[in-house]
Image 1 (tube, one colour):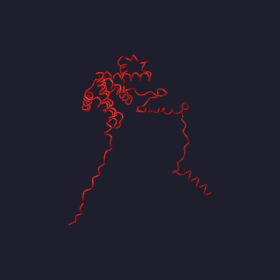
Image 2 (cartoon, rainbow, N blue to C red):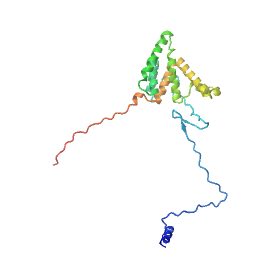
Image 3 (cartoon, rainbow, N blue to C red):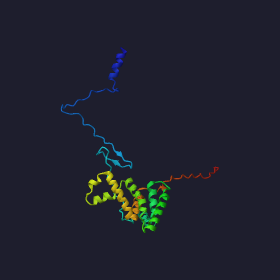
Image 4 (cartoon, rainbow, N blue to C red):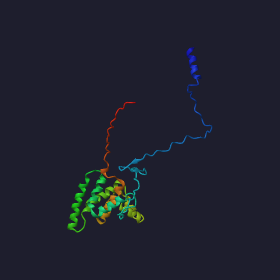
Amino acid sequence: MASEKQHNLEETSPLLHQQQPPKHSDNPKAGPPPPPPPHFPVDWTADGLPVGHSSVLGEPMGRTPWNSSLCACVGQNDHFCSSDLEVCLLGAVAPCVLYGSNVERLTSTPGTFANHCLPYSGMYVIGNSCFGWNCLAPWFSYPSRTAIRRKFNLEGSCEALNRSCGGCCGSFLEDEVQREQCETAFDLATHVFCHACALCQEGRELRRRLPHPGFNAQPVLVMIPPMEQSMGRGA
């Protein structure tokens, strides 16, 4: 008898949550609730660029142009103006130093300056001594332009030429292998025929995108000892 009273009190207690039967819609023609919107995951390439899902493997983002043109040797009138003038001076007077600095900044590894500056200097001297112009060093330095273009997903010379002429080579550029071979050949031609301008353009691009590896050192925490304290006797 006591258990039945307790059961009745539990049913009539306002503190207990009472389950209500599901409400049915008065409209018999109402259909099921709409499904949630589909969720498309976003993948990322090795360089941190998002890819779409228009195909099975995904298509990369559109390539961006260089920050400055090939012939803009003095750079742009921005906060990198002093750096652009330094790059222009190095490209005209000491291209070996500019090339070594570009590779050191690109690889973000301190100590690679000498490994690239010294071989470039040797090829520069041999080319000017034997052939009368710098014809050997561009064959050694042009891979850096290809690496910069791939790292930052930049527009190549072949793609820029195709865009300027109205897409006459669109079918040729659809093949990734053929397009990359064409861009690599254009990188070599740019270094051979416009070597100083190519080094300056690469130097300006790297200075706008990457800090020098020598500036990546961890800050040093200096501990200052407390001053001497003396205990005074109250008056």
